Image 1 (cartoon, rainbow, N blue to C red):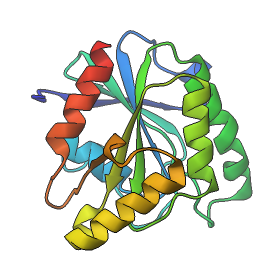
Image 2 (cartoon, rainbow, N blue to C red):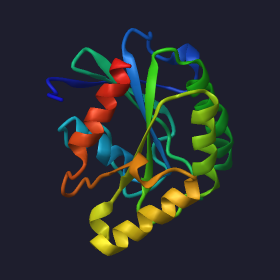
Image 3 (cartoon, helix red, strand yellow):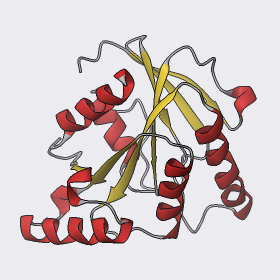
Length: 194
């Protein structure tokens, strides 16, 4: 995918504030600190289209970005970070469910897991919602450069077992080495064209 333009459109929390659904959308979901912002920035070849933060739980709104004036990437709020205020935590579930359920222009969700962490309850809940609403899901495991090859294989097998999904359902990605970038773009393009 050649990226000629990548622009922030707006942030929203509910359907009345979403931008008009004129472009097909691919959303990105995952726990706080899973590498979601870094993945999006690598995909669009921009250092800081999406703000990365060393403080987890920073993305608390749904952020819409226009790519090449032909489709949108949507950064969904990270979840599962303990220090986020309780009110924000409570709002997260309904905000995410509503977006997944009502957004007609949504063509797929890139669902991200950290290779060093076993999926938790919120991760399984998100997978259940994606299945419930019939949203095509692109499974990505990030931060693969943090482990050796042997550790990598073992951790992917554990994640696959915890989610009940086959190992080959996951694309492996490193923001550091950019490994996996092309494969993820291929899967995004397939979802956009489906």
